[in-house]
Image (tube, rainbow, N blue to C red):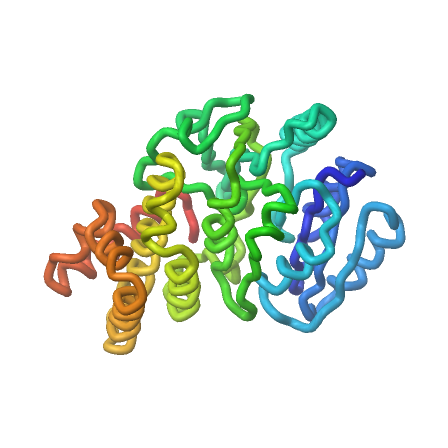
Length: 341
């Protein structure tokens, strides 16, 4: 039995993918690793085939035309045979000790017939520039090492989110949710972190620093200049997320999940505004206005909820220049805090 399917979307990843794959091979025959070559133009496919030949019962390779990160995730999920599903980007890796702890918990719960819908783990920003780390942990929000429901989850502060790096979904839950990510679009991680949540009822928080998230490449999608430049893709993802669940559907969720989903969606909107309006142009302003108009026309209650949430309201009622100054200040604060470049 395969307990975890790891999907590793790769695009021109020859310089760093070995570290990622080697870290996942520690799971041995208990896991499968689906390496998706997304139309790379370097030696990525050759390296992937090398691992497939050496570990034929663990590693599978998908060679496809370029479709973007979401396309790679879609391909991995379609093939997944593991009880759980986890995306690991090709420049990231898993911490060995935390990995063994997670796998042990999954195996134990599977044997006992108590498997949760979702495991939550910690993740760590690994900064290449100065070899420092920034830890994102959830020990103050979830009861640790025990099963819980969303009603046991404490309120999240403004800056804390359940990013994709922290989530290990049961594969059947993801498939039931109908998760399918848009192609040729960055920032689809946000969709993975939000859309399937109403399908998760039983949770388990493992207080272990499992996911190591590399920060430092100039071409990374989370590099701040790239996020500003790719604002249209952020708008696309934000629209898809606001289209996914209506106000009424969110409001009907258990209290803890309801609060978190409104918190998360508001934070995603604030981030979108930051990178769309952080650099002024008529086109950017019009694009942001068009998104708000779309949300309002589709779901007025959700529109008003997002417009007046605490973490958005302070940007809504200031004059344009002051608003941009606040956004730029927030941009720089974020850069300093987690060193996104």
